[in-house]
Image 1: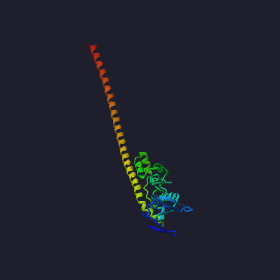
Image 2: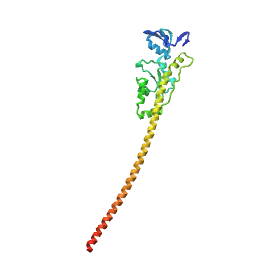
Image 3: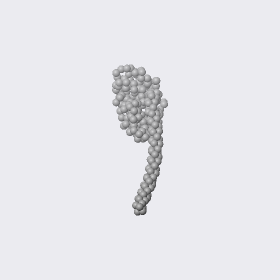
Image 4: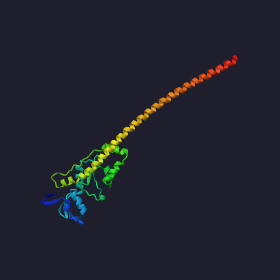
Length: 247
């Protein structure tokens, strides 16, 4: 893909980059247009993420600052956390920075401070496992806040970065929606378990009531038998006394 911006021809096919040790990167957002050398893999990720454009096989232009990218990502995701559905006030790296993840439109999502702290330096796959091993109370909290979010690009359609961003976010959208579906499935299972527990509690209460009534009946029957035995003993003693007197 090729576009023209301010009289400069930009290319967005990372296969055109020369596979060399370092590539020149020029930052257009600075006054002096700072120039530095970056690795080939980093330049490739910047082009794929819609942050930079290639003007020569060994030279790229970086369009945005990291602060601007994070602000645009928060506005793109409507200030909603993609992990829990709450209000998001930070931007989280899907691939952590310690594993080589860069600040690009495809690698950043809006997140709340709690989820960002919980994810920490974990990858998305490991964080999915952590979500699946949460306790019941944490799942109940996430179930109340969980809202399925779709990635809607904030970039305007008339810019050269829109097509690049839109093509490279499909896989990321699929992984995050899969986690949401898994959590919703777990929530349904928890609801069924809660209903079963309530039924078991009602059955236990009914059995306790029946046992109490049976114990009450046994007590009344024992009292009646005691009264009968006392009457029988009294009659027998009186009969023996009268027999002794008259004989």
